[in-house]
Length: 85
Image (cartoon, rainbow, N blue to C red; front, side):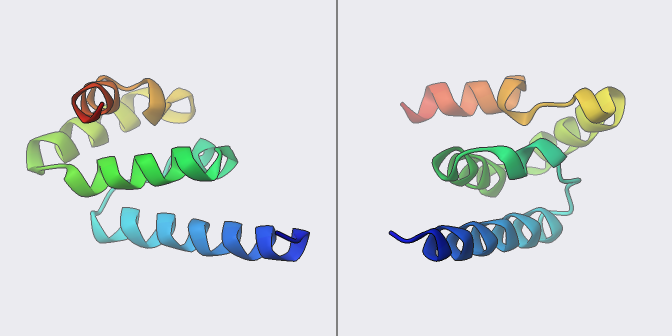
């Protein structure tokens, strides 16, 4: 895969991140853009699996932790990841 292909794939992936978080009305953690493509996909699948209770917990954690919020270290993501594998 060429460098241009990687750049376009990353741009497409970031658009999907933006669209998913907007659709689910969740704030976007800035750190997500620096993750590997596979990890981003996992997070998107996690977001898409959330029910209202999960979304509320996510918003509370995000608001309380601010810039130190890391979705990959959140209990909800860890529990989802464990159940997935």
